[in-house]
Structures are given as C-alpha cells and as structure tokens.
Amino acid sequence: MSLSAMSKPILYSYWRSSCSWRVRIALNLKEIPYDIKPISLIKSGGEQHCNEYREVNPMEQVPALQIDGHTLVESLAIMHYLEETRPQRPLLPQDVLKRAKVREICEVIASGVQPLQNLIVLIHVGEEKKKEWAQHWITRGFRAIEKLLSTSAGKFCVGDEITLADCCLVPQVFNARRFHVDLRPYPIILRIDRELEGHPAFRAAHPSNQPDCPPEAAK
Amino acid sequence: MSLSAMSKPILYSYWRSSCSWRVRIALNLKEIPYDIKPISLIKSGGEQHCNEYREVNPMEQVPALQIDGHTLVESLAIMHYLEETRPQRPLLPQDVLKRAKVREICEVIASGVQPLQNLIVLIHVGEEKKKEWAQHWITRGFRAIEKLLSTSAGKFCVGDEITLADCCLVPQVFNARRFHVDLRPYPIILRIDRELEGHPAFRAAHPSNQPDCPPEAAK
Image 1 (cartoon, one colour):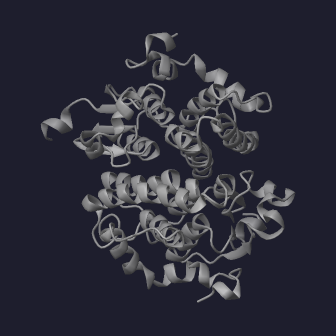
Image 2 (cartoon, each protein chain N blue to C red):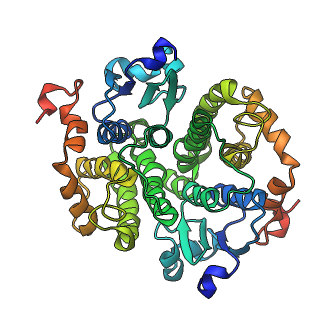
Image 3 (cartoon, rainbow over the protein chains, first blue to last red):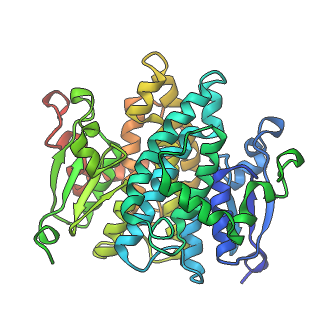
C-alpha cells in the first residue's frame, strides 16, 4: 500500500451540510478515525467552487472523502464504500428486503428532499420564496417517510439496528426544524430522532460539534 | 411462497419518466419478465396522486415495483434489490472501488440532476423559467459526470461492462435533449449514449417503445 493509502481518511465537510453529516455519522458508527478539512459553503462565494476543490469534487459540493488512496464523492456512494470495505458495525441489514427498505428511505431523503432544499437551489429560488419552497418539499418527503416507517420501523428506521437510513434521517430532521416545518404529523420520525440524539456517534457528528461551527451556533 | 410472490413482477411506470426508464433497463438487462402498469403523470392532474396509487408509493411518483410479494419504491433501491436477488448479468462490478465509481455517477444523476428537472418541480418553477432552470441543473451535473467519466469510463461509464451508472445515464441524456442542452462539451457522455442506443435492453426500455407512449411521440 502507498503512503496515502495508509494515512488517515480526510473528510471534506461543512458543519451544517446534511450530506457531510450523514457521512460523519457513518464514520463514527464504524469507529473509523478521520480528519476533517472544512470547506466553507458561504465564505468568498463558496470555497467548494475554487479550482483546487473542483479537482476533489467536480460537483463542487461536500462531502468528499479521501480514503485508501482514493477520492470518493456523493454521500450514499461513500457510505456504501465504507460498508463494503469496513464490515464492522454493519449499517445495512443482512436481509435483502430490509436492505431495500433502508435504501428506499435513504433515497427519498437524498433524491426527493435534500436536493430541493439545498443551499445552492434556495439561492436560485430567491430570498422571498425560499422558506415556503423548502417547507413544501420537506413536508412532501416527510409524509412519505412516515408512511414507509409505519411498516419498517422498530427502534430505528428499519428494525432495531441503526442503518444508513438513520444516518440520513437525523440530519434531515435538523433541516426541517431550520425551516420551521411542523413536525407533529410525523410521530415516528420524531421518536427515532429523539432516540438517536444522545447517541455518541450522532452527537459527535452534529453540526454544533464541528471544528468549523461558528461560535454563535455552537451549543 | 405465496401466489403473489410467484407471479410476474409489476412495474408502475410512465413512458417518459427517466426514473421508470432506469428500472426498465435493469429488468431487461437481467432478463426478468415483467408487466407494466402505466401511471399517467399528466392525465386528471396526475394518476400518481390518486388514493389507490398513494398506497403503492407514498411519494406519489413512479416507478414502483411489485416483486416477490413486496412493493418497492425509489429507482436505485429497486435496482439494488434486483442486483442482490438476481445475480445474473451483474450491474455492479466486483471491485469495491469500481462499485463506488458506479454509485457516484448514479447519485450525481439521481440526487444532483433529475430531482431538479422533475416535472413536479418544473410546475413549481413556472412555464416561463422552466427551460432555463432545467438547463442550468443538467449542465452542472453533466460537467461533473464528464469529469468523473474521464477516469472511470471504458466502453461504458465504468470499465467495459454495463452497470447501474449506464442505466441512469441514458435516460438523463434523453432529458437533456428534451431541454435542448448543448451536449457538445460532453464527448464521453455522448459516446457512451451512442454505444448503448442500439442495445436491445435499452431499446426496449425507451419511452417510444412503451405501451403508454402516445402515438404522436412513438418512433
């Protein structure tokens, strides 16, 4: 193995990015030590757009993970890579149907909700309409997730073990609160979120515990 | 096995939906016989919003697949289920890094491009701005995909075998053409699209060959 393959993984992350947060949770759950390289999405028009970072992630967004001598992008692709190379503390169930249920919830969030209330999209939507826009898409997604959870959930999103679905859900609930979405219609989502808020791997991944969290936002 | 578990899979599909199309390609490549139940996204305000279909897919969108006695939603979750239950004609490479590269491309399309030029989003954006909006997000995604392909592609998106990435790419190229995106800056994307347009599994999955394709749009 080359030197870079042996060194500690580097996560390009922004404290409040829900996609970075998903990967931070997965790394913590699997107890993989990593260093964070903060990429500010707001400083100087967004550090993710600079030439150097574009070489890391051509989508000009976080996260990206340097690991095993490779650079990986896209949160679910990264989490699947971690799952397939670091089998300790599995984040996908053994049962093939349950795996599908985990991926359904991940995809509703990663394709059906988050991209539509992403910072870069909200800039295009405009200041005046952005709250209503974000609320619309989060509400639509949460209605569907609550319904999916009504048959899949045990203690967590799918059964009684923490999975990739939980890694995606908790950051999205945080975003929902930021946009003042009324969460009372989603008791299962709220119960799971509460269940996980004190978990050490989730707590350490929380935006307020990131090195680039501004002091006024820290808990 | 129950009767429903033994019967032919049913794909809820709309002829022009790129997410339905991805799954049709995967089913065809794996030579899994299936029946199509068309769900019109435009008739009577969208059949996907009716109560009966909402029970099938709470996100009120296509595709959904009834298979092995279960109902699955979200195209990538469905394709992974097919891959894990029907190992014939694999759509993910054996090599773990290549698998990550496949999933990166899938996710750029499924989370970074398609959701933003989805019919339901374009309705919210409004008639006047919708073309420019769709072009913006497709162009952003294609720039990144072309860059990813520059290191991953062989004959197809990742190496010389057809993978889930190709199942996602071809329908997205079709959408790009619908919105008159200039594709000349993306020679690798164009080459792979041309390579696959004559493939029987891709041709049979094409919108113009669907039972619900209106006569005026059929080839």
